[in-house]
Image (cartoon, rainbow, N blue to C red; front, side):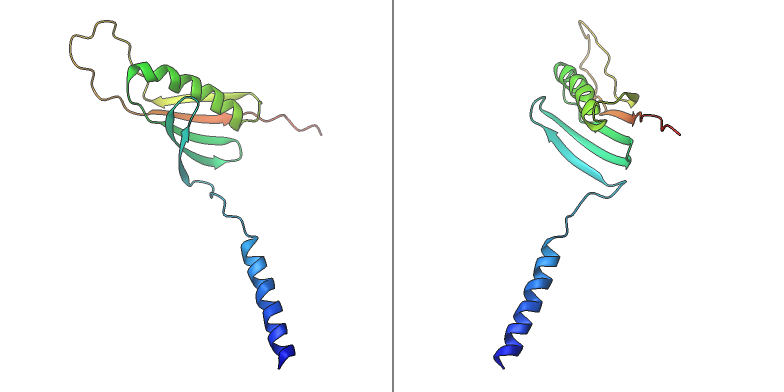
Length: 123
């Protein structure tokens, strides 16, 4: 009887160990909501594949737009691991009015497509 209990405990502990070893990773195409503490930027990131990303940086005011732009360049460099990259801005570039005569309308998020360049393979 004691042998059966010990055997069952051993099997259950092995199964528990195997179940705890699995790591949850974001699937390709799944959007993550993230925050950059250095530039104080809220953004959404979608990994399209290993070299392509869709980023949506939440806008709040014109003064913060400078931080968002700096964040975008630094984050793109980090995602591409220091390799060359191409940014295609699809929406959200804010206009600069030195003396606006009317209240500034709501600005859409800065939406960008990021493509990391890879080194060509040598045959």
